[in-house]
Amino acid sequence: MRPTYIKTVAIAAVLLSVPLTFAIPRTAPESSTTYASTGTSASVDSLASTSTYFTVRRDLRRCASPMCGGYFVQRVNQSRTLCANNRYARECYVSEIDWDGHGEVEANRALLRGDIVGSTNQRFGKLGRFRVRESWQSATENQPTGEFFRVRDLGVRCITHPCLTHQEARLNLTQSRKIAGVELNKVGAPDALTQEAFTALTSPEGILVSGTHRRVTGPAGSASTLDASQFYLRTKSQTSSGKPCIKTGCSGQVCSDEEVITTCEYRSEYDCYKQARCERQANGECGFTQTRELTACLKRRGR
Image (cartoon, rainbow, N blue to C red; front, top):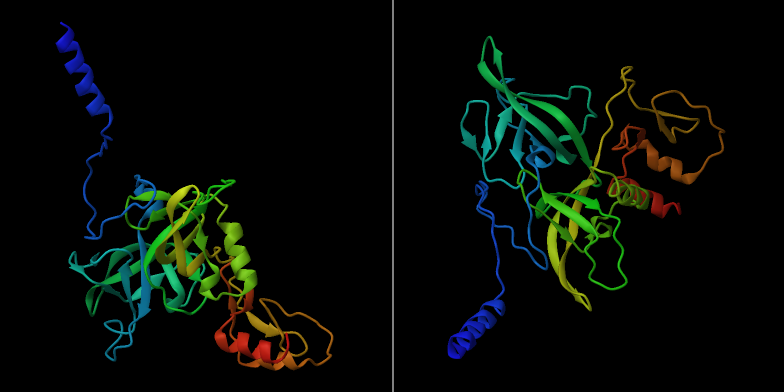
């Protein structure tokens, strides 16, 4: 019996030295891109919190409206989008956007959650219409690059690095994981807006981010961090009064939805606001949109 005992112990020792990986089978996402895990394994995130998000661009074709002049919408992180005609395409044409009380955002700065629904026009037949359920506005006018994620700060702090401080979930997919932080400063947004984004990261819904991953290493091993090319803040629902934003104050230096009385001393930076866009911002309040031109003008004027 002794030789059998030794043989059994040897086999057990070999088995214990081999790491075992268990995978839970699930339906593969439509996208052919796989979610490579660096430093931690991917987990499943509910579609209820990650779908369905679309980017938007205006239709600049010249033909009779509503066949032209609407918008093209495309699901992020996916190669195909199901259109109102029940066919898949890279992007779908919709004749209008139904904001349904959500904050309206310019097409080139919008990341919208919603649905493509069919609507019948007596003259042109069935046309697509986009119904908004959430509206998010980009921090700058820069075009996003990379993939799109929902990111949250987990409130975890470590005495060494890299530390898995954030949770990211790919939009329109069911994959999420912990990462070693998100870099927002490279987006080039105004400091106040970047600070607002860091605050929003600690909320249950976090913020939406487009970007690419970068590997970081340290005493605690290696992990991925997310370098943002753009970030998006949730807009607030429009007020029932629907007041437009106007330039007010003695020199038009205030953007508000009601008249504001100010003192009338002149400052050179007030000239910068003459061509600036006064509109509702991501926080639902009226304000001057911080374009490159406005930022550069204020910097030249010493503000």
